[in-house]
Amino acid sequence: MATGGSWDPTDLPIEPGLYLNFVEAASAAIKGGARGTVAISLLKYGAKATAKQFYTVSKEKEAQDLFGSTNIASIRLALMGGAKEVLVYTMPATPAPTDYVDMRDAFDSRMFNVFVFDQEAVEFEQDSTKAWVERNRTEGKHFAVVFGGTAEEDADPAVGNARTARVRHDYIANLIIGGKLSGTSYTSAEFAPYMAGLIAGTAINRSITYARVDLDDVNKRLTPTQIRAALTAGSLILVHDGEKVKVVQGLMSSGKKIRVIRARQAIATDITTTAADAYIGKIDNNPDGQAALISAIKAYLESLERSNVLRSPTVALDPENESVGDSVYLLISFTPVDSIERIFLTINV
Image (cartoon, rainbow, N blue to C red):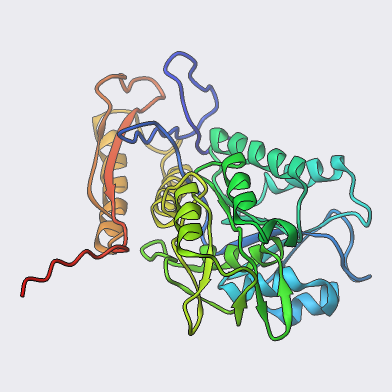
């Protein structure tokens, strides 16, 4: 059953469902995702786990018991970053390209906020994952992905920025800096699960910009010029500010703010889920039923307005498409609330 997705007035879907088009000033896009869950494709695990199966863990001890303490670095980092839980898919011992296809297909039927690889992923798998993200987006399932690179790639931020350009997408964040913690060094790909946990675990009315990261140092200290180039490229970067390691700015690879994207993710997911549970097939498509649906969606958006997620929400029937038969067309608009990230002072003396 379809519970959401994009629609084209010239080619309407036939399945029962609620179809959304959120229109930005410059381009149309739909953002979405559940909150709090990180999805990981685990490469190594012990005898208590079986290949090509899902497991959900919310504590490190659970992961140790299932997969073995030496195999759960990515899970541990995701939980450290702030994930509520980790949805684990166990890969075969010697995964082939077709196994990665099976893995992505399997995740299609599960809800999660952010997907991340267990370790470094080759360029082909990154590109295939980008296509997977886009396919799910058009089908109404929305989630984010965090990529990273190898130690060699981390040594040259220009290489990381080139990867950002290659995987550019509103739903994809690309980390180009790794770090060191308690004597252990992490490449950006190895540390990407922590960032996935940080993104998934941060409230949608908060930004990860300047968020402190549990590292002793970064594996590459960038110059001011390199920092500016990375931010311009849309790369996700970490810096050591002399006291601590922090995220410079919460950016998707498209250059859009993670906070803004995640707010739209929550709206798309919550509205479609609520409509499927309470409205589709349950109310009449007449003025009273349409008013009930509009009122419910507006009340939801106004609750987000009170939480400083957005402002000025409006919901109305779409005048360009007549709501008759079993179809209702709505226009929803709002202004996302961003965080203050740049302060400019003019001091007169």
